[in-house]
Image 1: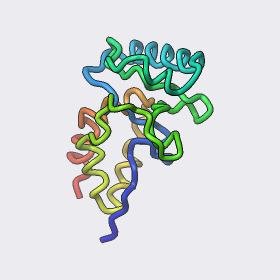
Image 2: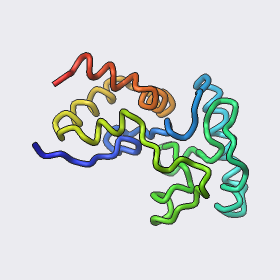
Image 3: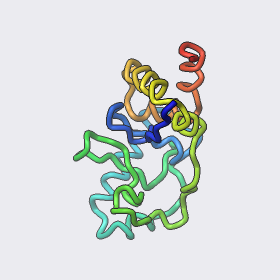
Length: 153
């Protein structure tokens, strides 16, 4: 079997972005969206990326990281502007993030054969979720468990 290392977090085919590992104890979708909009506005007003990333490492009450923003130029994907993928490989998360964390869903997905990955992506797309709901359900394993129950091999 050919195994392919496909990223689930910022997968172009799904057209959603996952930020599940960038927070915890998430509250309502409305609270998360409000904090993401606040972060996005603060990022726009920041003099530099470093200034923005130095605003503190605590999470918002919604459970979302203070560094996540909505990237309106890229289909409203939720990103961390300090992530190396946003900076030609340079890391700006300044030790505040657990950069080695990988949720169980992402870990298992990367180990699946290409055909099973494609079935999971199709399953996700059929759910018609936004990035907030997607992130919560990827992080807590809900989508993985449901998929495995309905589509196991």
